[in-house]
Image (cartoon, rainbow, N blue to C red; front, side, top):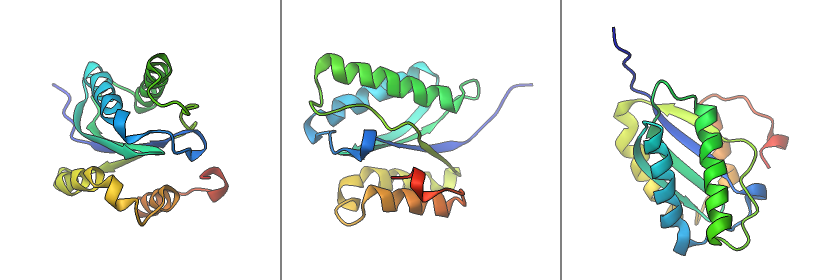
Length: 148
């Protein structure tokens, strides 16, 4: 018997201390690099986007890939790239943790549209409020002292 899965993840993580270091001009290069990492890990990528202080990844993760290892690989590889290429001058690293939320295939198009509109969305809603909303929506217990 083969293995069959259909799990869409929204993976979210921020820059260290939520610093606004991911300038708009180099974000597409960063996202393209992230796509390569995901593809090398046999993942299907639907969308990657973000703003100055955080990233959203919409992807199916291959069943042989551990989510925590994948996120760690993305953070380590992109940190090296950013520093090596001097892509974001003030970048000091990624936050320690991440959020990962699952969605049904029926939610995929709305989720992609939401992630594609991050700049517009964050003109009115700060990242911290967005994260709390995601955690609450998915019934994830959290302690606010670890969010900020």
